[in-house]
Every structure is written in C-alpha cells, then in structure tokens.
Length: 155
Image 1 (cartoon, rainbow, N blue to C red):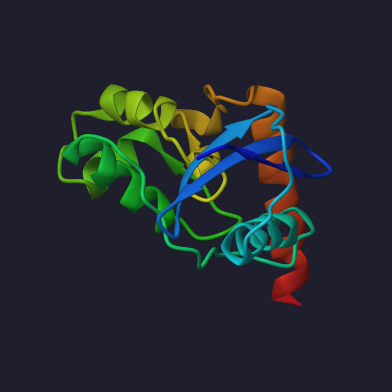
Image 2 (image 1 turned 90 degrees about the vertical axis):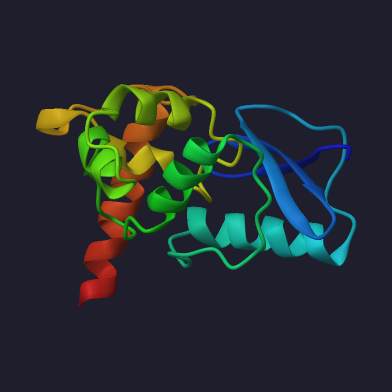
C-alpha cells in the first residue's frame, strides 16, 4: 500500500489503493512513485479527467474506512451533483439526523478520499465555504472548476 503520485493543475495527490479499490487520497502530498498497475493507472486517469473538466463522476471502486455515521455521510456526499453544493445541515437531514450538522463537518474532516467523495461540495449556511482539508483556497478553486465545466456541459 505504498502511495503513488498524481499531479494535477491544482494540487498534487498521494493516492493509496488496495484490493482493487481506492482507499486514500492525500491532498497536497507527494508520493515516491507513479502508478504502476492497471488499476492505479485507471484511478490516476479518472482523477486527471476530473481536473481537466472531462469527468463529473468517478467509477472506480471505493473502500473508505470509518464509522457507520461517517460512511453514511460519505455516501450522501457522492449524491451531490457535480457543480452543486449542499449545506452541512442538508447533509445531516439526508442521513436522517437533522441536528448533526457539526458531526457532518467532522465526518467531512475525516473523509479519506477527498475529490472522489466530494466533501468540497459541502458549504456552511449562507454559502460560506467552511473548512477543507486542502485549504479553503483549494476548495474555492474546485468549486470554480466544477461551476465552469457545468456551464459548458449545459450548453
């Protein structure tokens, strides 16, 4: 489970796969090698296509590890359409726990597969960006990338 490097125009990614599934993405991190299996190349290709605006959903199998609540939140995040956002409260309601907006924020904080599990699409009430493991500037840039490509896709 040695991480491999995926360089994008916005951020470098250290990626870990195991057992034919994506396990971890570390934003802004370096890794000692490039992808060297077919699956790793597939993951790298899907990530590259996302950052180029050519992919709006990922198809690689995921294997995040977390509590039942975290897994529920991460599943709900994957239901947020490309180019759209939801509030922490909306995600809390979606997972059946309307009073758990702060817990949703903590689940986002512990998301092991950012970008693919799009925690960057969750904002605070009033569209305030809130936190993001890669920094608020990267979150803003990801949302801008999606907004730009959503407009192109709508044409």
